[in-house]
Amino acid sequence: MITVLDGGTGRELKRIGAPFRQPEWSALALLEAPEYVTRVHEAYVGAGADVITTNSYAVVPFHIGDDRFKIQGASLAALSGRLARDVAARAARPVAVAGSLPPICGSYRAEWFDAEFARPVLATLVGALRPYVSHWQAETLSSIAEARLVREVIGADGLPLWISYTVQDDGRSAEARLRSGERVSEATEAAIALGASAVLFNCSQPEVMAAAIESACAVIGERAVRVGVYANAFPAQGDAEEANSNLHEIRKDLTPEGYLRFAREWAQRGADIIGGCCGIGPEHVAALRAGL
Image 1: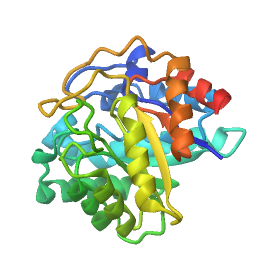
Image 2: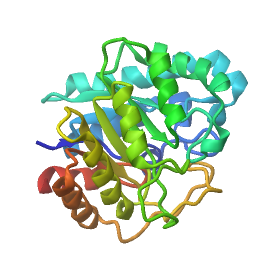
Image 3: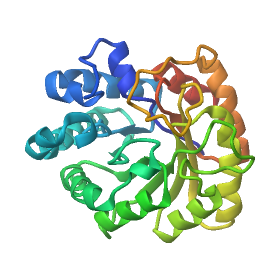
């Protein structure tokens, strides 16, 4: 049974006309027009998503600034949780809410990770989101260290933890690796040791996900840990990139039908949680729902 995730939030907000600019990214809609966030969640539920994700990815100092985060970080994160929970509660079928816990120090840049800086920021997000979420979704993690900090901060609160890594997509290695250079096999073992109930891969190109799935499934074996994928529609991103520092062009070849072809391969290789990341919208999710 495939669990269908939603797609990207930031690009969908921009597409439907929500306030959207750098550096606030998707957090700007929470600040100025939260009704657009509701519309995005509703679109994904209407498309068939079983899980919608809180719009908390950009509620970090990296995007909204240190001063604003200190004043408004908790309230904005809580708003993102409440908006998602309200949409899920109105759905005609069960819809889960994933609490998005982003890489606090910047996406794709493992070398920027600073646990002492990230810990209180992550704790603010966790405390604000906890009343609204069905499970934690620590996403776009570039290193094992980022995953370990997530487990430390959330503690043993009883909510399932899904750990989602981003992997190299520029062809540097024949073996699936995180953007830190750590092997996916090592990262999967680490996620299991941290008590993750699912290991996912997101915000990388669709072409590299099959190898990541194979590496993860080989480690998981018969253990009751799920595997998931939600790829982006970006061109390949190298070490010098940061996922949300620029408004990257979206690939024209990743139509809903084109993305579904990748998704079918992921399912065949062992993924049972499938959705989309940046540039993958409700029309793609509808294709996943119909085609999987």
